[in-house]
Every structure is written in C-alpha cells, then in structure tokens.
Image (cartoon, rainbow, N blue to C red; front, side):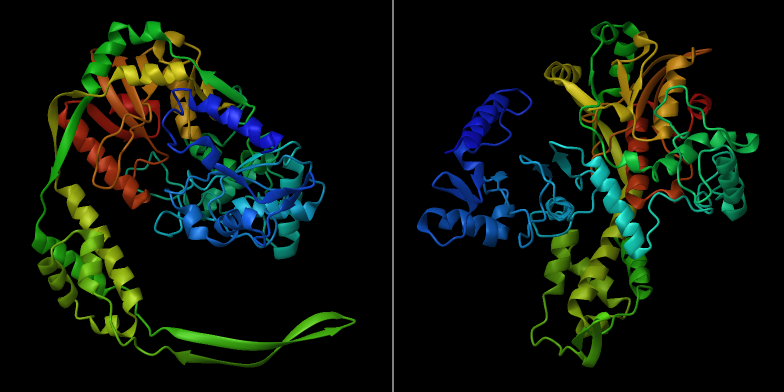
Length: 545
C-alpha cells in the first residue's frame, strides 16, 4: 500500500472514533477503499483487469456496477489517476477530491460529469430529491471560474439563458394579503421587473447585478410601496438566478454554539414541556369512497398506446464544409403483445398494501382494463401512482393522533449533537442579536422568508423566545416524517406557546401534495397535544393567528 493509502487509513480510523461517525460503517478500513491503479515499478497506472492481481478490483469497479451500488458492498472510497474520464458509468458519486492540479478543461468536464448524474436508490430507481442530488468537489484550485466558463459555453452552444430573469418571472407568485389564492399576473410582474432594473438590481437583459446582495445584513430590496410586503418572496425568486449561490465555499462555515443558560430558562423549559409530547396516529377511511375517487381518476388518466419502436438509419458525409448527416431509411412498428402478462394484482398489492378485493373493484369499475393489454407496464405504473395519490388523500383526511404516555422528544439529544459540533454554511445563517431569546448564536434558514421571520422574532419585543426546531424533532405521518419550522413564546395580554410553519404563501393549494399532507398531519398532531399551530408568511401573521 502506498503513502496515500496509509494516510487515508490513519485519517479514517481517527474520524471513526468520533461520536458523530462512530458505528456509521461496520466494515474494516482496508475494505472501504481501493484503487483503479496498481504499481508498476513505482509508477501508478489504471487497472486493466488483465492480471490476476487486479482482476477483482477491475471487475467490481468497472463492470459490476450493481454490486458496487449495493449497501452491502463495503467499498466507499475509490482512488484513481484517470478513471474518472470517459467510459466509467456510476451514478452515485457524491464527493470528488482532486489530488492533482487539472489544467485540461476537457478533463475537468469529464471529472465533474461523473458526479452530476442523477443517483439511484437500492432498487435502481432515479432519485430526484435535491437534498440528495448534491456534488461536493474538494479542489486544490478554484472551480468557480471553470464553472462560470462552462455555463457561458452552454449558453452560447444551446441558447440557454442561465441567470436571466424573465419579465414574467413573478407572475405566478401569490399575494399573501389576498383573501384567496391570487397570482400577481404578468402586468404586476412587469412592474416589479422594471422597478428592479431601474434600481440597479437587474441589467437590461435581466441579469442579477452585484447590488442585489441579500447576504448583507443591512440589505433591503427597494420595491414599489404597494408591493413592499412581498419583499421576501421576490428575494427568494431572484436568488434562484444568482450563479454564486450554486457554488458554495465549504470554508465559509460557522459553528452553532448552544447557549446552555437559555436551556435552563423557565420560559424555554415551559415551551419544551408543551411541545415535546410525542404521539401515535391511527387512520380510518371509507373504502367505498377510496374506490369511487380512484376509479374516477383512472377514467380520466391519459390514453395508453401500444409500445412502439422507432428506427432511423443515417449516412454521415464529410466535406470541406463540415460533417453532415442524411437519413436514408427508417420506420415505426408496434411491439407485439407479450405472451405472458404480469401479475397486476400482486404488483399493486405490494405498492399500495390494499387488499386484493379492493384492488379488483378499483380495476373493474373504470372499464379500462383493455389498456392493460395494450401496454401492461405503463398501465400498471399509472394506476399505481393514482391509487397511492388518492390513498394519501383519504388517509390524511381520516388521520387521528393521540398522546403516548411518558414518551417525549428528549432535550439531551440536542445537547449531545451540540457537543459533537454543528456547522453550517454562512450564507444560510442569520446571526442572532439578542442571545437570550433563542438556543444558538446563529439561526439556519432555507429561504429569505425564513430569514426575515428569524430577524423579526429576534428584534420584536412581543417575542420572548423563538427557535428553529431541530431536524430530529419529527412528527410521524403516513407520507413521511414532518419537521415543523418554528417554536415561539409570545407575551402580550397573555403568554402563548406557538408552532409556526413559514411558507411564501398561506394558500395551501399552491404547495406540493406531500407538503400539504404533512402540514395537515402536523396540524392534527399539535391539536392533540393542545398547541396552537398555523402556516404563516410573516411574524405579524404568526402573532395575529
């Protein structure tokens, strides 16, 4: 083993002794790393699979992708001097550490391209979760200029306008002061766009300028008075177009320090006692209602066609003018019906956990079983999605929560995590001004709406205590765990203990289905333990109920 391998094992063993990582991987250190190269007279070279010594490594890394992606395979860290170039197909690359100084632009593209593929789960399905789809590059040089240049080339080659705010960009934003969901529309969006250009936040082509600097604690976006109440939503929308928000410098981090004097304060302890009660849920729903709604949705689903294969044959001509392609033949043909149809009931029962009797009713009532013969897999996929969507809806409507006696969220877990060290990127942290009102020296935020809310809580005398609830504070729901945003203690005529969820709109119809379902379940959980819960966009809404 070479020096890099020895250094890796020493660092790995040291980190695995820390409480944060202890027990994370159960494999011996020598099994979690390997290389694409062997040593040939002291010179590193890629394994070729032609010698017995490197045959197993080559087979695992270059050929046996399914085994490499398995959670049971111990290999996690791969060292290579050139294998990240073309020809290596592994979608689950999340960290790339460049040990050499890459001068070639093509090589940089190939290296980064390995990590920009959508990952897959243990079933081989693509994962679209943005919290998972994140590539970390540990570089010995600045990738910022390279990423900026690459983006410019994409714009020139494909006509894509990265970072350009369109004049209709704000048309779909909802006005929080409206009594019902009301999008701003194109005319208001044009007014806001022109205001941003006139104030120097955008140039004439819609590119965000340096004057737009929401990370500056003194920054206030200038807007027409009638739309000033939408400042947070507009800042969040503009942030989506800022290139520097896409590349984060990992050195710009801060440690979150727990203020133990606050955890001993009677106000906080009273709040924690109110909100820390755990619950369990049970679900009751009307099977006839589920069958009726699901059957209706299946009737309305898109028409299903037979699978078709399209072929095209091209001839490539090379001349002084360049390379041209000319289609010389082609055709379209229907795929023959498979001789054996899949077991649709077994598939749907596995994905929905409904009884076979209920599934038979759902499949028969719409009268579309003929589509199953046309394209079995497409029919099964669409019907499964519809059943799960309708099942979630009736489940959420029929859910009831009840307290679990003596079971609460333990405060010591937060204290233990703080002792291990909590660090976050500076660009997502608000620095607290009044330290006696919250748990940490910084408050993490995910949007400008949350940042404005934290700042308002910090500076408003009516708020006696506030905190962003920790990630481990989760409410169980049928659609996955729900982590509420804020806990507050306010005092005016009386002391109130509140849980608030911050969104850019109070109109739940504008949110994604899973968000709506989790909020509905969260509301019933807090009703069961007697805590006031609401969805708000500002502190004023939070205090007014």
